[in-house]
Every structure is written in C-alpha cells, then in structure tokens.
Image (cartoon, rainbow, N blue to C red; front, top):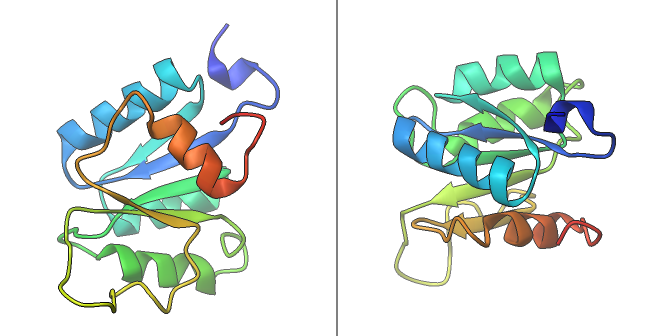
Amino acid sequence: MSAADVPDVPTVLVVDDDEMIRELTQISLETVAGWRVLTADGGHAAIEVARAEHPDAVLLDMMMPDMDGLTTFEHLRAEASTSDIPVILFTAKGTVGDRQPWDDHPLAGVIGKPYDPMTLGSQVATMLGWTHLA
C-alpha cells in the first residue's frame, strides 16, 4: 500500500530547481515521514501542480531561475484555489542583519539548506502544527 492509499497521510509539494535536492527531499519525506510527495522544478510548475492537486503544504526553494520562491508564494496566495496552502521556504541564502527578504510574507516557516533528511519531516510537521505527525 502506498502513501497515496493511506487516509490522513499528508501530501507535500516539493519545489526546487535542483533535481538532487528535490529527490533527496522526496525520499526523506516519503521514507522517513511516510508522506505523499509531489515535485515541481520551478515556480510556474509549482503553481500548476498546486492548482491541480491542492497539497497539504508546499516546501518552496527561495532561489530558482524561472520564478523565485517569494514570487511563487505571492502567486499561490493571490489565487483562490491555492491561497490557503501553507508554505515553508527552503533557503541556502543567509542575509546579514535582522531583516530577511521573507519577513513580510506569512510563511509557515523557513528551513535552511542544507537540512537533515532524517529530521526534515518532524521539522515540517512542527512548523505546520501537525502534532500527531511530529
């Protein structure tokens, strides 16, 4: 039986332009956390997948060539069919100072890269308040 066949298993959309990071994140969330994972390689693809599948959450890379993470987030929020999906930002960029580019965006959380694949699921579950999955 796959994660897609199990009731109450969350579906998470992983968006990253780096194929290896997408695959590692997918494997981590499927095998360690037991979740259903969808993937997209950029912002435009993420919006299409989110519209079609309405995942329980989106893990969104900050730096992507076609559309950056914050722009993708703004598009998801602006569309009625995807505006309620919680988004966690993945970022390898640390800026100097107290202000971060995402401070004014109502994100569910921010996870720095590199991350620990063994604890990623519990980290995401905690950020989203999925206490029964943490």
